[in-house]
Image 1: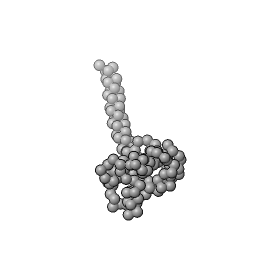
Image 2 (image 1 turned 45 degrees about the horizontal axis):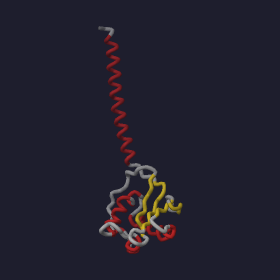
Image 3 (image 1 turned 45 degrees about the vertical axis):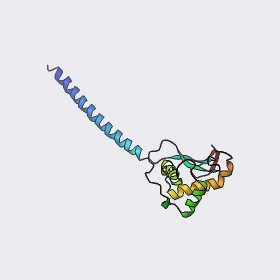
Image 4 (image 1 turned 90 degrees about the horizontal axis):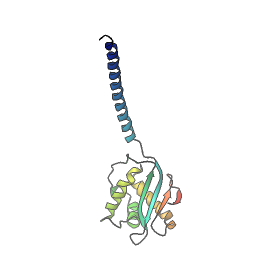
Amino acid sequence: MTIFSPVLTIFILLLIATLINAKNNKHNKKETEDDDDSITCVIQDYVLAIQYDCGFESIHGLWPDPVSLCNTCTDEVFSTSKLSTKTLSDMNKYWPTCYYKTNDAFWSHEWSKHGTCTGMTQEAYFSKGLALFKSYKSKCSDNCNLCFSTTFKYQGIC
């Protein structure tokens, strides 16, 4: 039995070391996963979607195109009170809904799905979409998507 005692002791020590290492790895993995959750989205370009679905040319949306899936978008709720009078007036004219019951419902959808992932304020996001539309809408003669760099330099139809 004395021959098994050193082997059994080594086995128990290895087992304890393995369990401690597994616990540390699980803890480190959890910290890494938590860190990944807080990584800011890296946007590679933006897409301005222009539509003719309403019977006239209008904005469908300004969409960030992230390098990978984003999970750091904010939960900020859309509110017209966060928009200037000029931006809101232009949105009613150039960014109306064709399918939602109200413009507010459509804009809320666009903000929560796309705008909250840009790092912009509501005013900056919607006014940027409007400015791009006014400057580049002539590039489309039907439903189309226009691509822009992260600095909003025109890249072409995409």
